[in-house]
Structure formats: structure tokens, C-alpha cells
Image 1 (cartoon, rainbow, N blue to C red):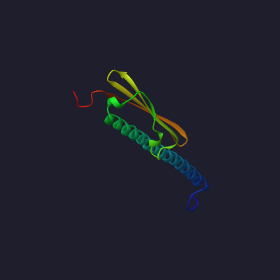
Image 2 (image 1 turned 120 degrees about the vertical axis):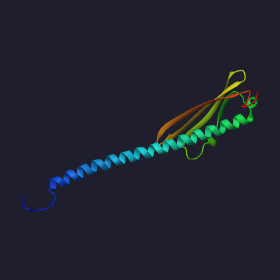
Image 3 (image 1 turned 180 degrees about the horizontal axis):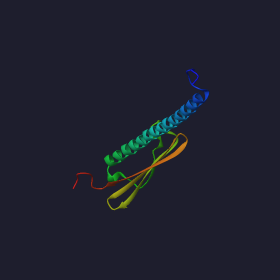
Image 4 (image 1 turned 90 degrees about the vertical axis):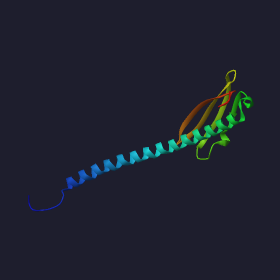
Length: 129
């Protein structure tokens, strides 16, 4: 050694390159986590909306349910990004049993998402014999 203290230019360049790779990886991870969080939030909203409509249909009773498709896009919260579409279809599976199938479509970061939920409502309600 010649007695000089400090870092060489090569050591500094290597440190900068390694730091850049680390920062780039961390930013990609953060971006992915933000996307996952947004998707989870939108899925929770879609699930909650379907559950609320299911409960209102159950409260109305089996006899009030007619086979067909009903659009409920206007009932979706504004938090779900446009374009969005939502409907449910009621079909008679067997005597005394109706099937309700929900289709909820929305976008997350420009990617189309489709969620489907299915539930059944019987002529004999919960706790009735």
C-alpha cells in the first residue's frame, strides 16, 4: 500500500451497481404488493356485494324468486373500476331449490377480472321444518 485511504473507482462503481440492482428489485416487489393489495380489496368489495344481494334474496323468500337474469351493475360500489358489469341468474335446480349464480366483471390496473359466486336458496328456510 502506498498509504492513501479511501475507495478506488472500481469499488465505488461495483457498490453503485449492486445498490441499483437491490433498489430495482425492492421497487418491483413493492409494486407487486400494491397490485395484490388492490386486487384483494376489489375482491372483498365484489364478495360483499354478492353476499348482500344474496341475503336480500333470502329475506324475500323462495316463492318470490323467478327464474331469469337480473343486472345489478348500478349496485356496485364506485371503488370497482370501470368498465364493470354485474348480474345474477336464478334457475330452478330441483323442486324447492333455486340456484343463484353471480357474475361480476371489473378491471384492476387495466386487467379484466371476473368473479363468479354460486349459492342456493331452498323453499324451506334455515331453521324451518
